[in-house]
Length: 287
Image (cartoon, rainbow, N blue to C red):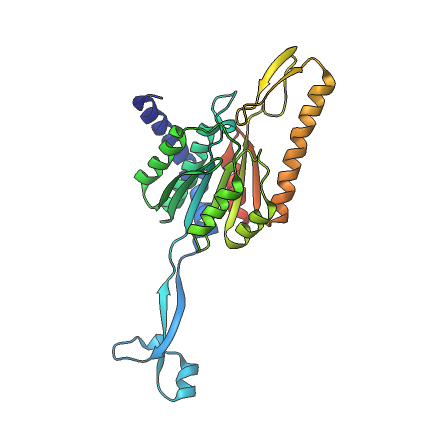
């Protein structure tokens, strides 16, 4: 895309996503993930000027001298957006490509987090991690994240979700809110997903297109895997072939759903063009 087209697309996504974020998601996000406040840090002897209401009466009585509780403000949440940029994500048959749909959902999440004074970061991955945008706050930062998703070079190689999760866990030790965008066509390691879900709060966003799961009857056709480059001829007029193709796709979705359940992680299946805000609203509300 030309620079002017990118700017125009980012602006369109900002308008749509901010409208949904402010009208629907912001309140539920704040309720679900407010997580701020004061938390206990330590106890130390009373010093002149300390507030009396901070006195720890149990320790004061035990040692027969005044002690006070020291409280510190909890840090804000960090939201990490992990986005699959393998070639199968650069596809769409409706009003949006998958990458554009992901950018809009990511924007809505980002603006919700910004409204809660939380930081948002981005990891773009395929067969390896290609770009990391460190977590920051603010509108300009969210716009930069949208632009990075839209303008990424989508990679003709199978995604490695394991690698992205391991990379994220290596950087962020403190529990973070993680949104993992992918079509999950890769064969990831369930153990890695389980470890990541124990350390972080994960929502898998399985993004698909309505044509991903069905092939029309167009006679003999040459198909090419966007990521491996493998080509195959198929007779799409064969009902059995079309049925087997659709069933294999359904089985893959069932497999991914079962894996996320086994890992105690959440999963959202959503197709391009759908109203994603209602799904996110329900997710936040459960939290």
